[in-house]
Image (cartoon, rainbow, N blue to C red; front, top):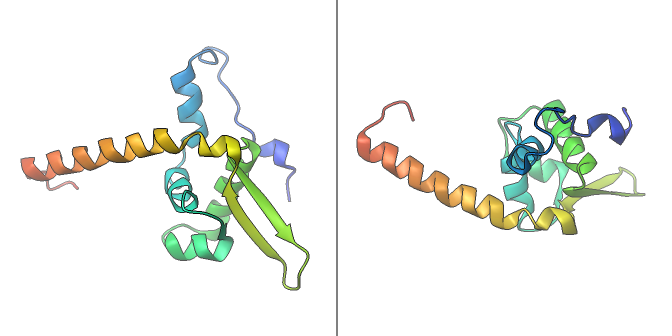
Length: 123
């Protein structure tokens, strides 16, 4: 397994001073917002996350969890049991994203409603 440092965000030097870009870099990923949504209600095991997100491949879920861990958004706790039990939860720092994610969710709900009213068949 690669060291956690290999999963840290690589910032574009041209945009590194843009706070919006930095935020998007951390939450960017097809499954990261949904992972964060699942973890906002508390600690989850890997299998809980897989069950909640059945469309995501195990390897993809692992990589995105490792990226969130490397960015100190979530914590991973490994319990010395057989079989090993691994749990994920939002870190104290990760919980500071909750309001941002709630705002994104509210905006998305409004957007989806607007598209449905327009009769947009692409959704």
